[in-house]
Image 1: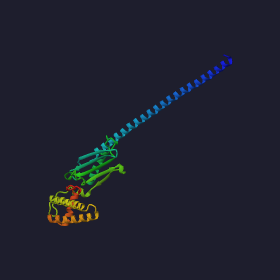
Image 2: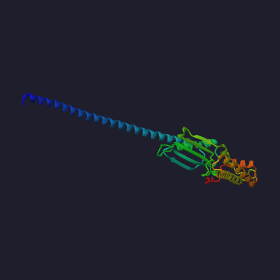
Image 3: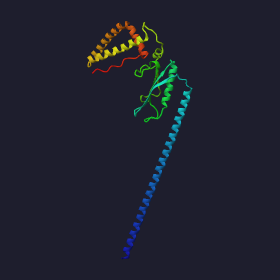
Image 4: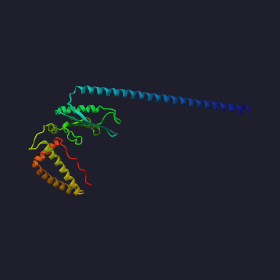
Length: 276
């Protein structure tokens, strides 16, 4: 082969070798870059895991300290004797709720009742072990007189706490019923010439007759609210007169018995089913 052609091939071979060398260098550099990036990602992930673990440990330590402080405070707080008769948790994606029903045997002062409610609230607020949240975000606590507690008629509480973060609450709302607190601890006495059992019977029948009037009016005029209301008022007045004659009492006495029954959480008849 002529020398000039041989030299040309050698030149091409040399350039090809340079190109191959450059490509190999590029590949090696890319591999090194990927290794470096992977190492950096692993370092970042390890750092994030370390921080998360530190935060978890710090959080658990803070919760433990808070619980210890709450326990220490609770040990120093004198709360009225009580019994928890209902402890009902509800854990859902929408809310984590705890409801307590508590009874007391002896009449507490308003301050003691408030202290009891707040003490119970702190204990519930620090509960853990729920699926959807670390602690409850809705808490309802009701205190009742032990002798008058009825699990099927829960409106006669003497004190309550309501707290719901979903409603924007930042602190618990405490309510004390002065009327029920005084009335429910009164000793049984005769009023209007009637024993308490007799007054309870009148109250029970009066509520039942009101329900009866409402149901009958609704059945008679299911699609006419105005006539239904008028008929309900007419029937209630008619049944009330029958009740007054039956027990030989005045309308004022029946009214006062109604107030007493509500204050003392006397039993009421079950709500009748809606008309067919």
